[in-house]
Image 1 (spheres, rainbow, N blue to C red):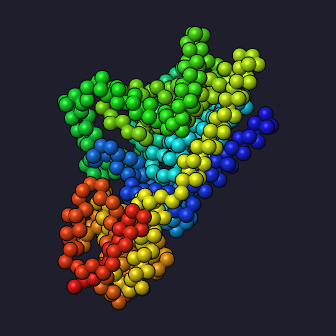
Image 2 (cartoon, helix red, strand yellow; image 1 turned 180 degrees about the vertical axis):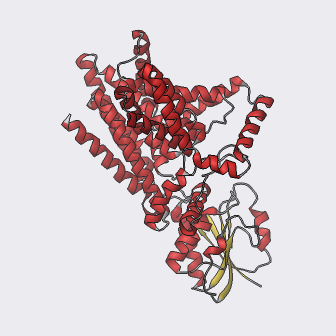
Image 3 (cartoon, rainbow, N blue to C red; image 1 turned 90 degrees about the horizontal axis):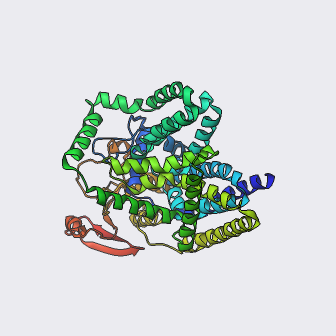
Length: 506
């Protein structure tokens, strides 16, 4: 047991170190959604405009809760707005989730702990979530903690554990409503199964706790003539009237999405994907053959975490996205650990086989990290923070301390990344902001209170206009360029896949 604790700590520390190396020097994506959140958090922290809602959901007029903004505000304040700090927060969530994941799995032996720990550290799907700062990502990273607390509550029945479970269910609903909506149902079903006659009181208390997490959205809705309520009802009514996608097509689409997520979880390795699938099928067959529920409540919890949302997506008019299907990845790994534990009980041959398989998983995990992340070289992806920063450095250096204007073409049109990075990096590094920075001159305001961040003193103008242009993936960049064709071209360079033109005002 002492060696298992050491192994868990070692796996977590190695995973944290690897993630820090991967995102070093701005080697992470900072795209429109990331930047939009940072712009909103800046408004909260710098201008003290506190919010009752968070990012938009998949339903027009319906918003997630504001908790994500308040969580992400912590690294913003500590770092002074550095986007890397929000990535470190995701890495912290990964470490917390990984610790409790391995605390659960260690009961099935060293082999199961090694295999699951290696996958949690090197899985492409898990790394992707710890490399991006988006509101749904903490769900997949913290799901093992939720399962750990729920098992403790179902076993011990303590009120504070019940409250913590419902608070986490509320947190998940705040971060992603299309997933979080199923967590109260999971807790209610499991409470009724494990707590029996004491379940009703616990469920009533839990619903009150869960309801308290929704108060900011309720207040917002009341202040805005029930905007979200009407939008949600309109969405449900419209879906019912139009019938939606054919049920068979919907089933195939959702199952295909889940299968893609499953492959990403197991590093797109054919032997690992089908090997883990065989172990999981063996586990399910064993449970059905026994015709009773397993002694480990955590297995039932994990099955419910996977199956309840899946059934809900099949039956309800919800457009299922990748981040919905991936949220139960931690539960799948727990089931894998249990399956490996059961295989290991088949005498010495089973134990040796599991241990050999676990070492093979660790070796492949190290290989996947090396090839996919640590040895991939420099990327020209225009959405990498380091490439965006390089473009901003070039523009400021060309302006030589004088005022200038800069406009950005992005396929997303709204240039949130450059809006934020020019304010954070440009102001911090060069001490001033451009005379104008937007996606086009004279466009309607799309960032509220932007004037609050303008230069205090007037700078001498260089008469220079810079155009930062990302690759034309929509075939519309020429329409944007037409707005500047009358300005004489001075120079044109390329930084990675980002083109930068320097023009002069007439």
